[in-house]
Length: 235
Ligand code: ATP
Image (cartoon, rainbow, N blue to C red; front, side, top):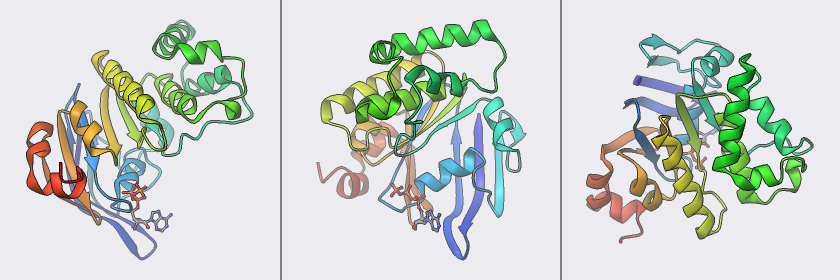
């Protein structure tokens, strides 16, 4: 579904990604793990067209998206939930969700997807008329995911969905990610919580200082000495 080959990405003179290659197959959950500043967010931003690689190729459903405008990338089915759950604080929950569907015209489909989001996240239905800025951190994360789903993505890019959430909520969010995946959406998940990420992923890539240093099945990675030592707290 997605094939990234040899991409370099710079911020001015700083090279944030070096010759990065990865693939995501349809229906998979693939996770990117790595320390702060490794380049995970940069990679997701590059896939959604917010940053452009200076070298390499990005193929999505057999087409190059390397220079496609952001809107066309969204229309083609890639939806990005950014780090830090950026919801529009002064708009209601429902208005935020409507915004997620701004490129769609199929009213009936939009309504169906709104119902689906409300069934995944009943709390958002309860709070649909509430200003989003007054939601708790966990609820805002749910709203950010719900808004991305309103674009009807084929590939969902999730950046640190567990950040700053209490363990019980983290579990809930990860269960919902699995549900979204079972429903047919492919997922590329960036996480610092490697333990949780590997527990739901099919495959994983480890990124260190802008380069992929390790990749494999999630179960192999869970047993890798290097991963255990560096990312699983030596468990
Ligand atoms: P985190 O989990 O902390 O977000 P990350 O793995 O997602 O880490 P990135 O945010 O992709 O890492 O950052 C990769 C590198 O690029 C870091 O060295 C960072 O300092 C640098 N970087 C990120 N954004 C910018 C920017 N706007 N301008 C300059 N350098 C940047």
